[in-house]
Structure formats: structure tokens, C-alpha cells
Length: 113
Image (cartoon, rainbow, N blue to C red; front, side, top):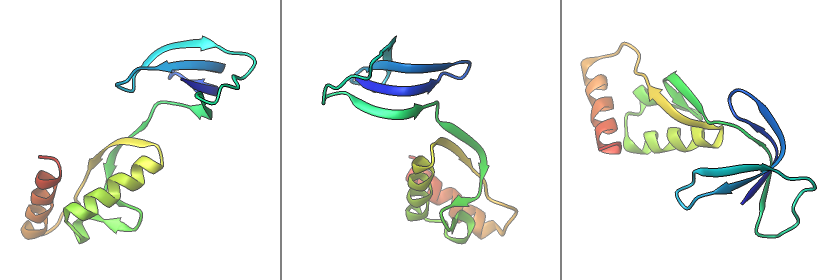
């Protein structure tokens, strides 16, 4: 279970709720919970909201994918975006040489088979 002081659902804000999470990581139920549970098995967070989706990103955390088109770079970019709340992204490669574009496509294909 997870206790959240605030939950943003996408259309509304809920205060002080207890969420039941399935084994697959899906939210099964959300119920009001005042006062805050003291059970040590309940995790506590201040704010819970849907993940962000970046529709055009060239890199992250100091790594520009076209400058370093490797699976290591992709792992670094993905890990840093997840830490920032970005749960999905569309990687972009600016106009470049054919070789760089092919290297980027190869790395992406190897990283996401």
C-alpha cells in the first residue's frame, strides 16, 4: 500500500489517500485515509502524479545522443529522465550525416529490440 498526501489524477487533486497497488504495479483502489497510517508496511509520498512524456528530446544529463550514438548513452538518457519523472520519450536526432543517423538507428535498435 501507498499513502499519498496529494494525488493528481489528471483531472482532479485528491488529498490524504491510501492506494492499493497490484503485483503488476497498477493502482487497484484509492480510498480516503485520515489520519495518516502508521503501519511500517505502508510507503509514504507527498505527491503522486502521472509520469511525463517528452515528445522530442535530443539527450539528457549531459549526453547528446547524436554525439554519442551508443546503447550506453541511451541507458544513461533513459535513467536520468526516469529520475526526473519522465516515464516515456521520443528520441530525436537533428539533421545530421547519414553515418550519424545510421549509428543512432543501430544503437536504438540494439537498445530496444
